Amino acid sequence: MTSRLRLLLACAAALPIALAGCKPDKLLDVVSPTTVSDDIFWSQENDAVIFLNGTYSALPSWITVIELDGLTDDGTTNRQFDDRYVYSDGSFDPQKPYSRNHWNNFYNGVARANALIANIDRIPAGRIDPARKARYVAEAKFLRGVFYLQLVSMFGDVPMPLTPLTDAEARKMTNTPAAKIYDQVLADLDAAAAVLPTTYTGADVGRATKGAALAFKARAALYAGRYQIAADAAKAVMDLGIYRLNADYGQLFLYAGENSPEIIFAHKYSKTAQAAGQNNNIFGEFGPPSNSASAHMVPIRNLVDSYQMTDGKSIKDSPLYNPAPDKMYLNRDPRLAATILFPGASWDGRTFDSRPKPLSTQPEAIDLQNENTSVTGYYIRKWIDLTDKTDRGNGGIDVSLMRYADVLLMYAEAKLEAGQPDASALAALNQVRARVSMPPVAALTRDAVRYERRAELAFEGLRLFDIRRWKIAEQVMPTPVVTGIDYIDASGQLRTATVPASARAFPQRDYLWPIPQAELDLNQNLKQNPGF
Image 1: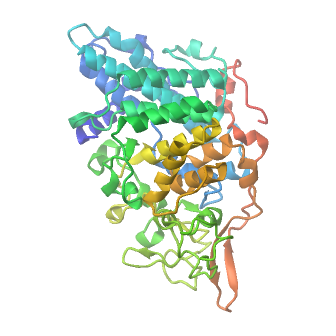
Image 2: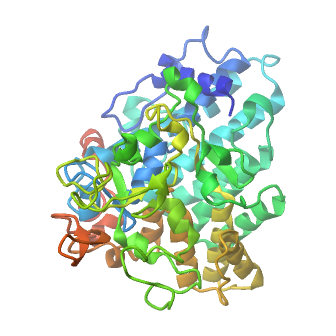
Image 3: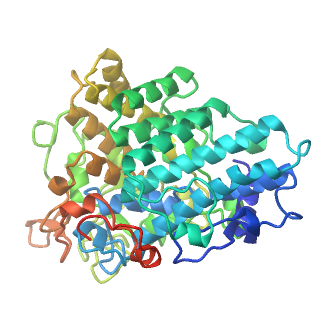
């Protein structure tokens, strides 16, 4: 996406029209056609472009994508007073702002998409190109489908307006059953795929494509348990013949990988758009303190131990595994080193040493008195590009929301769950493993698929949805204490870093987040999710 498009997006996000009727405690940020001034908007094609660009701004952001894994068995927030912390220990409630912020953001996007679809016909004939007009509507439907997929995945049965609403209409909305929401998501993505181009040039690069619509259709169908639809949609992406795996896995999450043919759809950022708010703070938020960053969310031992050895076996079964603190990371699935910083890793021209103080004198050393050092001794490496180390708050790295490796894994899983674990499905999964020189698996199994998704997609915002849809969250989440690195203490004893007061729980109710209490207070027709 060019700087011009980013600037338009930023301008649209700031326009009063795009925020008309917006109040934090409303069910929806309503954009009503009656609030749009005819002499400002819906009079020429550029109005539609600006409004559409503002709709893109509601896509999952860099912090949303990365921090969601801190609510799972892959990571933890580094501060127990952090509002996100309670989403991993099972103590959150409908009053908490974290889940409510997600609700507000995605409904903002829904409202904008609905407004464009409802208003674009007001632009006089001759003042908008018909083909581009159809594409703008298709982009809006694609975005609406993505927003509703996020909402239904997080909250289950939610209101589903498809047209702009007045305040009074919004307060009469009821919960739409999740199955119907998935129906609409699939319909929106089908409609988008039928119109959107496969590629763009110039200022339009970065917009939704046919491949993106089909890939999100596969994700939506997989989440809904409609496996044949998911397999067919993923295969349609594969058959386009325009995507392929990047040769270097680690490069995908750095500036060097932004234009990779593996990236199907991304939330675009730019350093040059800092003043317009289109930059990000990935390095400052998640990088190590040795680069003056804050490490607000960090990996945990559970994830580290899940990575296989290079022989394709687990650390429990492989003769290659050496549990010594200075040997345990050797001969591991290469995605471990590309995803996580651990003691002994090469980082910024030196050897990383996050053992507790005073064993380590490096800034990344575990120090429970310093909230910016990892409580586990592990740090995120994925997404952290050293190019940003001298300007940490002004990052421009794009965050992928859909890439080809995920499509291949969705295809394999959907075929398996549909009772069709054929050679094509096995080949799709093994293609992902081959990229990092991991040995092929001989048979397509749930364990193989689920391992691959975890190793391949860590810190890409998908683990929470995976463990919930697989109904394994209550098995993998609870733990009496969160642990981190192993190290030898000053007396020569083997120790494991533990996080104080870090017991985790996952009650059955947590398979859905609660409808925000503020919405229930405004609308008596809404029903709360069970257990809240």
